[in-house]
Structure formats: structure tokens, C-alpha cells
Image 1 (cartoon, rainbow, N blue to C red):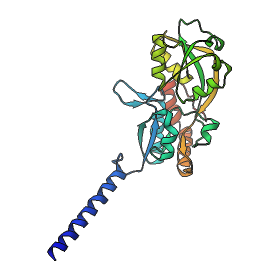
Image 2 (image 1 turned 90 degrees about the vertical axis):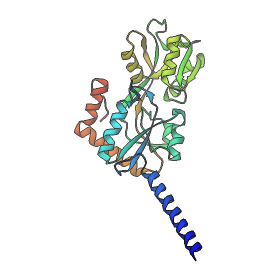
Image 3 (image 1 turned 60 degrees about the horizontal axis):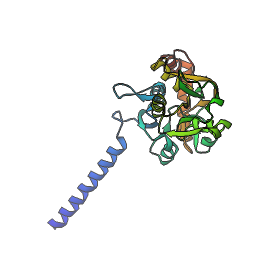
Image 4 (image 1 turned 180 degrees about the vertical axis):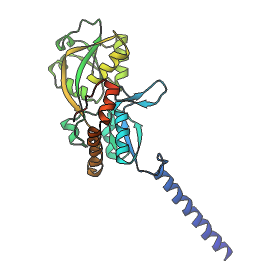
Length: 261
């Protein structure tokens, strides 16, 4: 009888430990007990989301998402991901939102739900300040850098000049611009807001061509079927537009309010 009792006791103890571990895993990342929303980001995408000199994740979208989380009454965790696998990360449930300069495209609409656009952007060509490249046609026979599986790549492929360039794909824009400064590529196709940010960081190093490849808009991506979360995020964005929060964040990063209302 004692042996049977001991076995029952041990089994009960094991089940208790397993249940406790499961509870800890669900609450991981949230010390407040609130629901935690995991946001997938490219942590090299300045000024939208990137690491500062202290290796802290900062940026316009980071501040916007934090403010939205407060409005929603949830905690937020920023998860750096391989940007080329962002939709897979979302559909698998490893992240809840894509929120880091995420461009709305018809192809992406088939894979994710989008909030209303909150920022306008364009794909532009960036070169060194002393480059002889002054227009899109000058890219013919040139080495051009671009972030892999980005909206910049879509914009370039939609333009006839894409058939005349030698394309170099990079994991992120920082690597592309590094190769531009080193002379390994002669131009980089990049988001306008990102290009302008790097121009402020490295004065007289770069220039942006007057011709743009494609206008576009940023929005937040939500997993297909999760309309409840989509509605909560949209309500938070709407509220932040009304109370001036989004305008304040925009002015901090861009010097003016450029958020779409």
C-alpha cells in the first residue's frame, strides 16, 4: 500500500510541476499579467524600428506600437525576425503583428489583414552624393543593391529599368548602404523615409534621385482570421489620431506630423 501511495503521490507531483511550467510559458514576457502582443520587426529599419547605440530597439513604429498597446491595455514584445519570412512568422503564430514600415501590396493582402494605412512612403533610388547617376535611366548596366523580398524589389521589378540593371540582394538596407559606400554597388533602391533618415545621419554622403519608383503606404499586418485583434489595433490608431499621440510621435521622429488621418 505504501508503494502504491508513493507512486500516486509522485505522479500527482509531476502533473503539478508540468501544469505550473505551462502556466509560466503562457505568462512569459508579461510581468503585469496582461496579454502580450508579439510584434515582428526588422531591427535595422531606421527610423521605423532599429537598435540605437545602446542596442535598445527604438524608432517611430516602436513608439507608435507602444502607445497603441497602452490604448489596448496589453503588453508588447518586439521580436526581431528575418524580414524575408515575415508572413510565415505571422501565419505560424510566432508573432501577432507585422509593424515596421510594412508596405501594403495586393500580393500581401492575400496573405494578411491590414489596418488602414497610417503613413505614406515611396521607393526611391539612393546613390553617393558625387555619383553621376541623376535619373532612373542612368541605372542601366549598373550594380544596384536592394533588400531581399521587400516592396523595394517589387517596385523595381515593375519598372522597365529592372531588365537593364545587375541586381544585388541584401538581408537589410544597412548592408546595402554599406556596399554602396564601399563602391561594390552604385545605387540602392530604398524606402524614402529610410533613405532620408540615413542622409541626416551621414551628411553629404548620399543623394536621392528626384524620380521615384512607386508611391506606397505603410500599415500594420495582422494574421488572417484574427479580425478581433485587427479591430483593436485600428481602434487604438484611431484614438491616437484623435488625442494627438500619433502627431506627437511623428514630430519627434520626422519634425512634423505626417501620419495619415
